[in-house]
Image 1 (cartoon, rainbow, N blue to C red):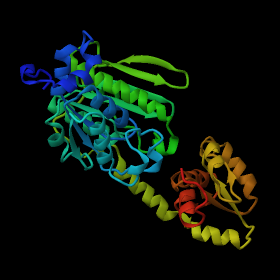
Image 2 (image 1 turned 90 degrees about the horizontal axis):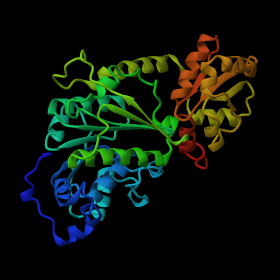
Image 3 (image 1 turned 30 degrees about the vertical axis):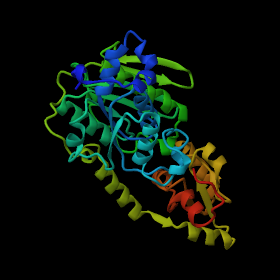
Image 4 (image 1 turned 45 degrees about the vertical axis):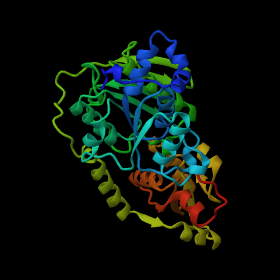
Length: 390
């Protein structure tokens, strides 16, 4: 309820002290702080974006915060997901987030939804909240969040991150555009690498998540100009911001109900094609690869198709680096042919996906290859634990 009955909202003495720097801002004041206390915000995800977002919403005095997440804290999260700590590794992210939020501000009501957001539960979960903030990292959930917000007529504060670049805007607010105006159709599965594959600068998450928190607070206060109708693009390497105008598409399809978003984004079709490809592809386990290396066999080439910086982190002994982008542009195929010189080809990457893709490309050049199941991660887990995982 963005227009609450403020007479019913009271601050106690400790809250006056806690929010004193807000209270002396003319744009916030006592009325604005009461609006923040009366507001409810649902955050989808407690990852890179959700972490700073939740910290600042709690500190600002949002009265009710809902969190949707079903993941557990992993060591690899801690580089950017600053709401979590080392002691929470292996435990549910939503519990970690709640613990930290209440440490920052015990006056917040924190609702937990330890579940995967789906077409079956999204409307029920989002309905009680004034604003939904999208901190997810995949296209099916982004379309789901968007469509649920459209059906419920709720603002959707959006952000995304990748490597050194971030985006932020506000969807479905005061007649403004929604996510489908930015992306009418989802990209083909696998076209956009995940952060696990492509990496992300940790502090980038803090900047974009803080922008999302700022937009959320401005909507609640009714102050300033929001990013509705404007897509903010941030490049951390260049320290540059620019904007693109967004407008509602007058001929966009009307959203009447929630659908199967995995199907809409082509995920099952891609998984079926990948399974079919893997079924037709020769594979070798890391244990079998270790036995082959230990046997002293010289009739094979072990090809690593990861990026050079990954090769610097960890490598399997005897492997030769030819990055997947080189194979995709054709130059790598020529190099692989020279390396083979009649020998067998075995290919690995981090987890097995990129190596499978490389084998498919090389096959079109007349080069057959065997994929290492699980990649170097499996090697670290099953063969040599001294090899770092990343």
